[in-house]
Amino acid sequence: MSDVKSSRIEGLHKMTPDARLQAVARQAGLDRDAVDSLAAAAGGQIDLADRLVENAIASMAIPLGVATNMIVDGREVLVPMATEESSVIAAVCNSAKRCRSTGGFRTSTSGPVMAAQIQLLGASDPENVRLKVLERFDAIKAVCDETDPLLLKVGGGFRDLDVRVVDSAEGPMTIVHIIVDTRDAMGANAVNSMAEALAPRLEQWTGARSLLRILTNLADRRVARVRAVWPVEEIGGAQVRDNMLSAYHFADADPYRAATHNKGIMNGVSAVVLATGNDTRAIEAGAHAYAARDGWYRSMSRWEADADGNLVGILEMPMAVGLVGGATKIHPTAQANLKILGVRTADELARIIVSVGLAQNFGALRALATTGIQKGHMALHAQNVALMVGAVGDEIDRVADELKALGKVRQDIAEEILARLRAGT
Image (cartoon, rainbow, N blue to C red; front, side, top):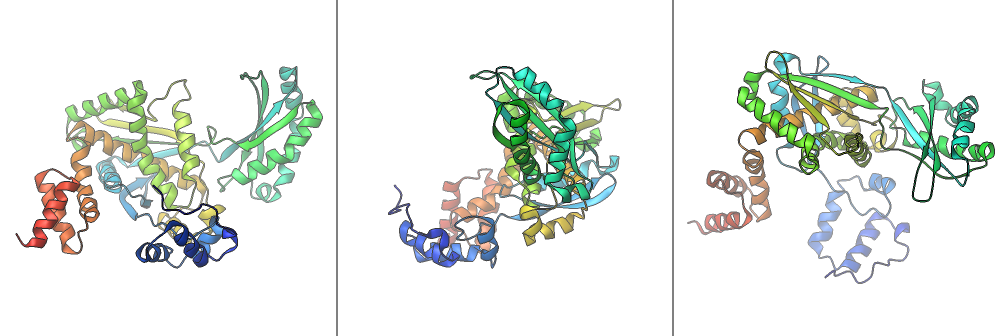
């Protein structure tokens, strides 16, 4: 049961972060160690946290590591990754090393194009409404471009219009998509503002009632693509290659397997998205929706053997990331990570992120096709387990090493090992 006395704290949002922390501690019955831990977690950036989120009391640090060995479009790249999961960064490093001899990762993109939807309701003639909207193309472009003159100045702005009639439980509704080039921004604010400005005009022109006016995270016009070739000798031979292909075919045919297969891809993708201050939830939502675009949920990646018997990996997915706006622009850690990456445009960032996703997928498939996923993962997880049972200093490595030697990375065994070490037996 919760120790919270009441979830109602009058005026919490008006307090300073420190006063807010003390108020929450009183209501939740936190001890001094818990309060000190939360205070220390802010890491001197509590003022920034207070500007980024409501009712801030601390920050929560995620381990930040760097993936090595990456070559993307002929350029050597160091890739910062923010993740709490053991083996993720190691898998990318290993996978990237194994395809360096073939040039690493080759990418392409469809451009920084986002869409917002405007829902039109209440018309008895939704198809007629659709045509009325399409007839106003030039006027719609003018409204959208006037909404964000700065975007227009840097070469972005309204690009196209798509209007659909969607059947629903309450009958047909006309859905207007405005297609916008958002340049180096993720684009949510730009396209949402345009949709808001356009909605009342659509009502005037069509007689329909507008309701929702918001972007779609299924950014299927903003796709990043990557391919890479792994020599068969770098994989471990033809049998390992064929096992990896069988694992891929399983994921592509079965949504239960595809969910875990694709989660592995997102282990890499989301770690870079988070490290650069971009929106992990938007990227994840778009990726999984894109994986189901054919009517069933399947593998995001594609795997083949080329004429020489080498393994070819391909990944295409929506990648709506930006370099301006939000945490990307104001968070000092995100800014430092972008400097490590050496990217100048959102397009470059998208290419690197999708390359990391493919590398992560290769690592998981190869592990599954050989020793199994647990051997490498649990070996790296052994230190986490040692920490969980209270090991400190050199005890951490000693407990972890013994767990790995036993081949059983379990908390109960770690507790026994630590107790024996401390007893000197």
